[in-house]
Structure formats: structure tokens, C-alpha cells
Amino acid sequence: MRILGIDPGSRHTGYGVVELHGDELEPLDWGRLSCPPREPVPQRLARLAAGLEELLGRWQPDAAVLETPFHGLNARSLVVLAQARGALLAVLAGRRVPIHEYSPAEVKSAVTGHGRADKRQMARMVGLQLALPEEAGEDAADALALALCFARRRRLDRLAGTSRAR
Image (cartoon, rainbow, N blue to C red):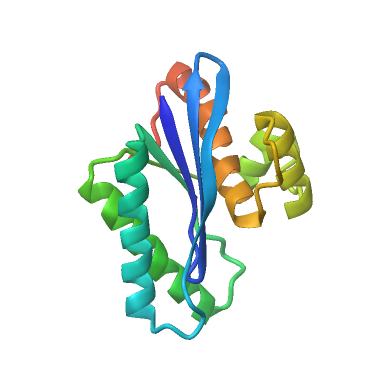
């Protein structure tokens, strides 16, 4: 099963693609889609959508995983993040890629065993668990963490008879 983790942002959207072989995870690709800081929001959204379309065409994931919105953001940041998420969700839904979402605490707990881990701890654990040859960068590490969380929770969700796919 091929899993695409996406860490949405209006300027930088992290992504990570992993392949699940039984209980083993193989990292295939990671990085971030970036937009110029002064680019108008509609052009940023179009750029994010086009970048995601390219990733979907290249990797053809079986599932996509995003983090649920973080509530501690200021109103302006939350609106721009919601717009970026909306653009990405529309592309995924248009391609009929099953979408799964997890809270930040669920992701941190699945990857580090601690729901309040900081970004540095998360990036380190992602690198160790996926045996990455180099540091992934904050945005990509967050996206890979989402893919890891999904892979770990997938079996548990199946046993419990629940699904978070939209």
C-alpha cells in the first residue's frame, strides 16, 4: 500500500510518500511544495493544487493522510490554512484518493509515544523509524509522520471496525 502524507501550509506544504509492505515501511519520496511569500493567495492555491496533481500522477497513492487543523492559530493564519487544505482536499477527492485525518496529538503519540513531542523530537523519530539517509526537513518530516501514523493506526482501525476515510 502506498501512503501520501501531507502537511498543509499556505507557503510550504510538506509531503512524504511511503510504501507499506506488511509491517515494513519504505520511504519513497519526501519534500515540500513552496510558494513565493508575496504571491497572492489564489495563485498559491493553484500552485499547491498543481504540485499535488504532479505528486499524485507520479506516485499514485492508495491513501492520503492530513493533520486535522490546529486550533491554536490566529484567525488570519487559520483562514489561509483552511484555504490551502481545501485546495488539497479538492484535488484528492477529485482523484478519488481516500483521505484520512489525525489530530496533532495522535500523530505525535503514534510516532514518538508522547502526544506532546516537539518538532525536533518528531523529525528525529521519523528519520530513525524510516532509516532516512538524510534529515527530511521540518515540513517533510511532519508529512512522513502522518504517513507513519496512518500505517500504525490502519490495523487498529480495521480491528475496531472504524474508518477515517472521507
